Image (cartoon, rainbow, N blue to C red; front, side, top):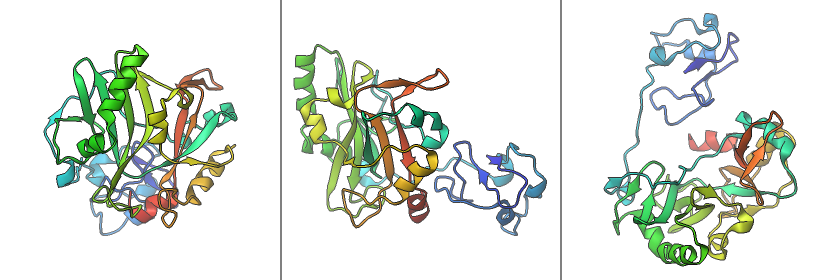
Length: 286
């Protein structure tokens, strides 16, 4: 947790540039420094005089908080599948230079607010995982129910048999009733794919099998942004294609033809990034 600066209008940020709500570190919200100088935080120093970059973790009493696991998500845990990266996308604010290397091959997809889901098949069998852990087979678990609903294991086995690969995975978002408060207000529970991985390599969309494309997150018709501000404005104005009466959480931009790009500074990066709507974050206390 760091001080944002010496101006009363500057916020206090956590390590991933998301302001933290006191008492609930998993639900970020913006607070100005002068708002921290209140009787709610008698132990705090005068933040107006704190140098930028000062670690305020102890003063704010920031601790790790884990929300209770819904019954539909519970189950016996196992190690996350091998040779599969955990789902994560860099925020556009942290990789702004990627905007300079985008071309017409890039597509915008809707970022769906649900729970991260990985289906993986390798020589050890079929695996179902959340963001950090695999889940032992359990018919009452929502992610295993998605595996059954979309016949994922059979589809992955068929693809693996024809491809010559040793391992395959499809990643996406499980969303709907009893998942993250169901912000899109949909009936039932669904799965939408955003990554297809073979032998540890994330394949560009043009190399996805047909069944993965059919399960894909919605594709959006948006112009390629040329600045971070434009990208954020697009996200703030976006309605969900899953339910147009609800706001979308944001946008994930991906190259449809490449898995990696070279940035202007010479660094290599995944050919994708996310743009999360600030309005959505404030509305849903994310």
